[in-house]
Image (cartoon, rainbow, N blue to C red; front, top):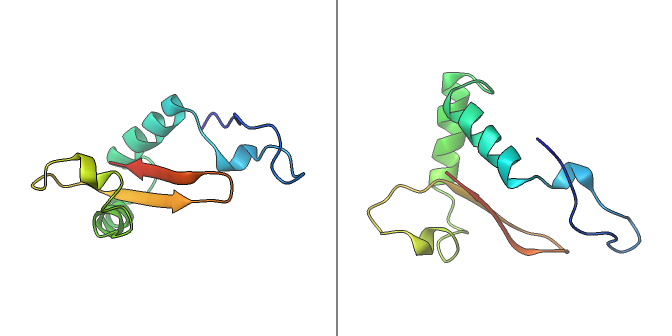
Length: 88
């Protein structure tokens, strides 16, 4: 999904285009996930359930939403970035 890198070089490896995406690309991914165009209904439900129960993001994305909202997220922290997040 529209991979691009905003970073030029990381520890001599250069940009990793497979580990990045544009905002439009992420929106397209989430839209297709919601419409079950990427996974079966069962697999989509499984993935969203895993993301809803992710506890590592409780002080990241989830912290910005009211407690009664259902937030499905996947946090990540890499050597180059601190706090990579995806939420639906």
